Length: 183
Length: 248
Image 1 (tube, chains in turn cyan, orange):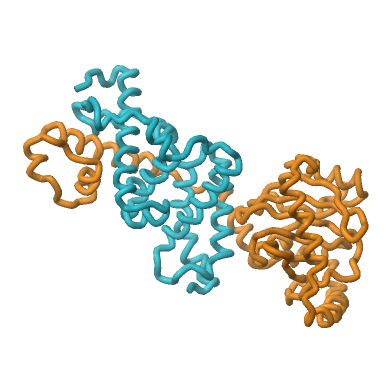
Image 2: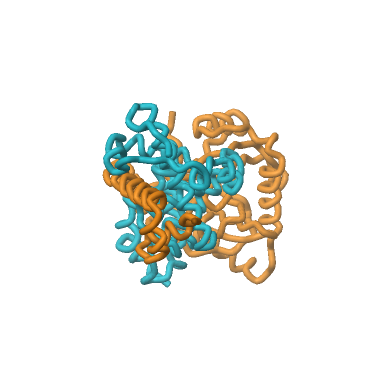
C-alpha cells in the first residue's frame, strides 16, 4: 500500500504519458484535458490502494481506461461493442496484402497529425491497445491487465489494429499518389 | 505455405525468435513484418511531441491541492462559528451515535433514487448558471455548486420534499457514478448521522441507506447532503469542492 504523500513523486512524472493516451482516445484537446484531470483526481483518491513499487504508469492507465469506458457508456457514443467493431474492419491480413516498396520512406510523407487522425479512426479498444503497445511500449501482459483481456487477445488485437492503420495510411498515400500498386 | 499468424507477428516484433525459417523463405511475410515495424515506429514518433499543456498542468496542480486542502479559504467566515458548530453537531451526534438512526439517510437516498429513475422530473441543466437561476426562481436559494475545474459535471436539478419541506436537489456526474446533492436551507435539527472529524469545521456527518452512502456538511447557511453509491470519501471530497456562487 502506498503512502498518499508520495502521490506527486509516483504519479505526476507520468502526466505526459497519461495525456498522450487521453489525446489518442479523445477527439479533441478539451476532452483529453478533462479525462486527464479526472484520472489524476481519482488516482489521488485511491492512492491508498496502489501497491508501492508496482507500475504506477500502468495503474494510471487502468484508471483512465475505466473512466473513459464509463463515459462512453454514459454518453452512448460507444456504438457497437469492440468485438463487433473489429468484425467490421477489413481484414487485410487475410486477404490481399498491401505492398509498400519502402514503408519507412512512405510514412515520412505523413504529418504527425495525419498519423494520429488515422489512429483515431480505429475502434476504441484497438486504438487503446495499439497505442499502449506501440507508443507507450508497455508489455503485452501490462496491456492485458489494463484492458481486461487475455494476452493472446492483446497480440491479435494489436496486429489487427496496426494492419488496419497500415491499410488506412496506404489508402491515403494512394490518394496522394505516393503509392500505387497492390500485391 | 501458411503465413505468419498475428500472434507470431507480434511475438517477432516483441523480439522473440519465432518462425525464423519461414521468414527467410517468405518475402510476403518479411514485407508484412517490415511494414508493421515501420508503422510502429512512425506512430511512436507521431506522439513524441504530444505533451500536457501548461494550462492543464496548472489546473491539475490546483485540483490536487484543493483535493488535499479542502475549502479552507472558502470557509473563512464559517470558521468563526466552527467551534460552536462542532459542539452543535457533536452533541446530537453523540446522542445518535448509539442508535441505527438512518431515517434521514433513507429519505435522502429515496430522493437520489427518484432523481435517477425518473429523469423526466429533472430540469436538464448542465450549466451552473442555469441551475442557479432555477433554484433562485423556485426556492429563493443560492446554493453552492461544483467547481467547474473539479472534473465533475451537472446533469440536472429539481425541487423535492425532505421532512415535509420543499428543498432543492441537483445531480452531479462523477467518476464514481451519479451523485445527488440535496440542498437544505437553514439548519436542520439533525440528520441523524454520525459526526466525522473534519479540520475545516464543516460539521461533516455520514450515514448510509441500502446501497447509498450519504455525507453532509454545512456551508454558508445551507446544509448539503451528497447521496450516491460512491464511497463516503468521494462524497465528502465532492462537498468540499462546492463553490459558493459570486454575488450579482
